[in-house]
Image (cartoon, rainbow, N blue to C red; front, side, top):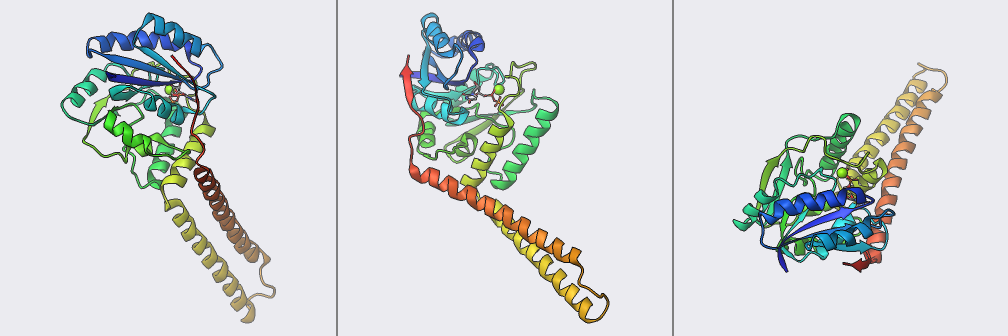
Length: 306
Ligand code: UDP
Ligand code: MG
């Protein structure tokens, strides 16, 4: 048991963890009597685990959780939170994209009685395409999940242990932590911070396919909005098809055209087929996701603790 746990998922970032541990202990030793830094090695292929063990000898506050394979950040963070022993838990990335400086403020607010302190970015260090990509991604997810996720927040936050317990009660395998965080209740407070310039973000960050995957999980596990929109689209496509077919028929009967326009029919068919394709594929996604959830497989295995 300790007062505060920093929980850091780590995947192939062994060069960064010592620097992170040094910076974090420096800030936390001035803030808290007792704290721990829980590094979750998410099945890294590099020296991450040996580095965590080595750091545990230098910094008594450092602990490690090694997962049996790479599960992705959502699960890695979940495993870290399940193994955290503090009264308050702070998920934070090791790549310095989440700054350590606001941590004492988060702790102060929690000591004052706030259960869930949420830092809100007032800018992003991401640039160019990636910024636009992330912007569009979060806009779409926001719309599809009925905007349940507050804007410009990440997983970086402070959770009272009580809130973490609620978080862990969400058992879905295709989890999107940010969406779950927004469901946890308790007293909440937002604090603003700016992302550090030149944060050492891993090149490329979360890959495009991982973001897509996350987006699909967010949508299929949290909202019927997409299915409903596709249904509307399907109905609209059907109306277009029927109307154009009738129009062609009437024009033909009235003698305006000699042969029914093949192009019109083809267009109507294309509309209908494409609508069916979209609808079918989304149904497929829902079925696959519900199969996965009903399997109730273990979310992760911890291979080793340090
Ligand atoms: N991470 C992880 N497992 C993964 C991918 C990433 O534990 O499969 C960790 C990574 O080490 C980092 C955090 O999750 O501490 C955020 O990852 P990244 O910087 O790649 O993503 P971002 O959110 O910055 O785009
Ligand atoms: Mg990053």
